[in-house]
Each structure stands twice: as structure tokens, then as C-alpha cells.
Amino acid sequence: MGPTSGLTIAPRGHGHSLEGQAQAHQGVVINMESLGKSQEMRFHINGNMKTPYVDVSAGELWINILHESLSHGYAPKSWTDYLHLTVGGTLSNAGISGQAFRHGPQINNVHQLQVVTGLGQFGIITRAHISLEPAPKMVKWMKVLYMDFTTFTKDQEQLISSNSSFDYVEGFVLINQTGHLNNWRSSFKNKDPALASRVVSNGKPIFCLEIAKYYKQEDIDTIDQVML
Ligand SMILES: Cc1cc2nc3c(=O)[nH]c(=O)nc-3n(C[C@H](O)[C@H](O)[C@H](O)COP(=O)(O)OP(=O)(O)OC[C@H]3O[C@@H](n4cnc5c(N)ncnc54)[C@H](O)[C@@H]3O)c2cc1C
Picture 1 (cartoon, helix red, strand yellow):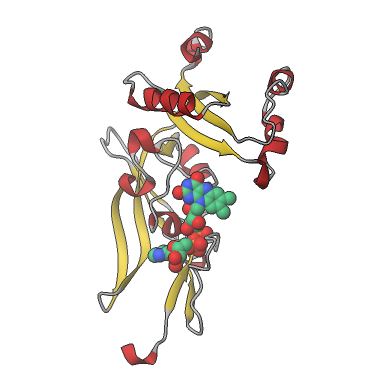
Picture 2: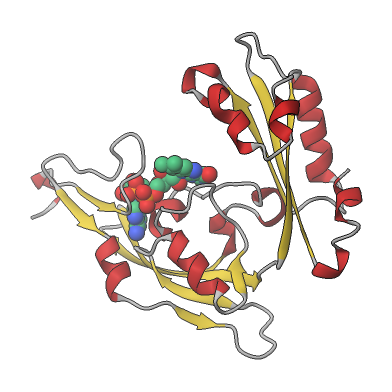
């Protein structure tokens, strides 16, 4: 129809972007998830491959890639916090979470993208080769709360710059407006809510570092010391 038609096109992944980016006013929206449903994941993990990967449709949900990869003993290296998002939806805007300080965002962990281009103006990702690593067997997860922003950022910087650091480091600001502050205690287990209840925000933001360390079964007796 040509550029003067004004027709717009938007690929839609899982439709979770917040500003209508996956919509096209009076245009065409392409449902990328239908690709995910019709195309299989292809794993390339045989032998001693240095760079194992899975070849997936851009409409595939990350949660499905996780389950399928785990059944092979592997997992992608870099994630988002929430996994009901599509490959195309997150790769088109990086995909960032607590592993990014070590591996880079999701887009840094892609060997190859298949992209359909149009008039040099846009591209629609149709498939991606996602880098894999052997899935960790055990993980120790910890949340640390801060009232002081400077101490929080200093600790975070130290953790991400230290060589023998953790496998996952992510910082959060817990603000009352979102309701997070009212329910964050629910993520503490057993005896911890009592400790958590000592933290009183008085309406001020609380800062939280979420940290994880992968370990092997044989290190189960020493992992707590490593975390401390
Ligand atoms: C609860 C929640 C938690 C989140 N947590 C994180 C997080 O931890 N880290 C993070 O980085 N992000 C996070 N996000 C944001 C999320 O990564 C983006 O909103 C992402 O774009 C949503 O993916 P989607 O599959 O729903 O994409 P959509 O919303 O459907 O699309 C997003 C954009 O990508 C384009 N697009 C979709 N598919 C393709 C394709 N195949 N080719 C080219 N362009 C395409 C769309 O046109 C649109 O512009 C979170 C979102 C939610 C709702």
C-alpha cells in the first residue's frame, strides 16, 4: 500500500508492555504467540559443545523455555523477573534482571536472530538462538533490607564488582504507593517475618537487595557461611 497509506504494523508478544507498544492504531497487529504455538524448540546441546543454545520462536514464552531447557539439564543465562513474556517482546527491549551484571541483558545472550525486515524501517524477530548453560542444581536466596540509600548502593556496587560474587544481584526500592511495602513481609519464611516486622518504614521507601548463589549438594554445609 506504500508509505503514504499511514498503515502501521505492530508485532504483539504477550501484550505486557505498559504503554500500548504492542498496538497499532487503525493498523495491523501480528500475534507472535501463534508462531510460538506452531513451532518447536530445537535444542543444540550435544556432546561438549562450547556454546549450547536453543533455537526458539520469537513468540515463545520464557516460562516454557525454562521448563523445556530444565528437562535437558540446561537453562538460559539471563532472565527477566517475570517469565510470562515472549522472546521477541523482551529481546526487542533488552530484558534485564539480576543476572545482567554478570552475563549482560538477555539480548547479549543470543547467538543469532532471524528478523523479517520491512522497507528498512522495522524488523520483526521470528526466531532466536538463546545461549544456554548447565542449570544450577541448588540455589541459596536471600533478601537484605536497607533504610539508607547510600549503604544500599554501596553494598550493591561491591557485590557486582567482586570476582567471587553472587550469581544474582538485584536492587529494589519498595514504595508504599504500589502496595509492595504492605505485603513484602510475606516473602520472608518461617521465623523471618518476626525479624522483618522490626523494620518500620514510617512512610519512607525501603531498599532491598535480592541475592542468590548457586551451589552444589556437597557444599550444603558451607553455603550459609558463604552467604554471610
Ligand atoms: C509483571 C512484569 C514484570 C516484568 N519484569 C521485567 C524484568 O524483570 N525485566 C525486564 O527487562 N522487563 C520486565 N518487564 C517488562 C517486559 O520485558 C516488557 O514489557 C516486554 O516488552 C513484555 O513482553 P511481551 O511479550 O508481553 O511483549 P509485548 O508487550 O507484546 O511487546 C513489547 C514490544 O515489543 C515488540 N515486539 C513484540 N514481539 C516482537 C517481535 N517478535 N519482534 C519485534 N518486536 C516485537 C512489540 O511491538 C512492542 O513494541 C516486566 C513486565 C511485567 C508485566
